[in-house]
Image (cartoon, rainbow, N blue to C red; front, side, top):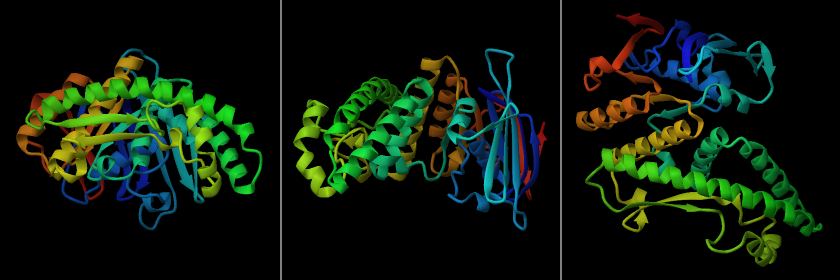
Length: 357
């Protein structure tokens, strides 16, 4: 997928925006607080209906304004077909249209504009709790397995009913079979996907951090490995009833990152963490491409902040090999990025964006 045109009005300091990006690497450069990250935010909003910078859409609106609007034309490297996405925020409500038809669920946006992002807070996927890593896994499965979203929703609904029965003293057993069936199917999909993801992660780590040995990643299904989920649910009933919720299942899944057997976040530097996150996101993009035959879009917000020029060069070579559309921000012309790799440059100053030839 590629963004062929991007238009925006009243997004943070960007009063108006209208650009036609290149199909591969687009450099967005300018001084701090000029609006570079806001341009990436526009793309992120179009992909999932929310911001990566705030939970409140009202804060995305340009100062002294109450509404914003976004439009994009999405194309493909493999066909002439295009899709048109539009977002309008007014009266504290987000209205979404795809090809002129209203969309009620923001999850539908991601099918038109699959997007991954690297920014200053991306290291949290390695250092925070399992929820952020589950979201990462679910993103990949949502895009490569058509059945995953409906399956996950069915499991979540059943889990909610089981928890309610646990709290109210109702009949729990009536939910167990449905919960087990959905859990085992989700686990089957996750096992296959996570193994492919981990294999690709190891490959990219070997290229980006060849001297860093002892990194391991393992998939934790949400219950003790090697045990049947039906057995776990049965044996944990008394505990679940006492606590009032189901303690084991796919809602507890995690990817466990270790360095020489110790939690990875305890032993490596912030720069190494950033490179490992780069490897993880590159692996996600690679698996997406291999499974779907399409390419996702990659946003890179200020990659130069914590990477030296040597590691930046390696990163850009890997990006080039993936053949994805990239939007990268920088406070300068990004000397580490070879001129021949940059297809278009956009300079941002005081909220105005212009293409630089």
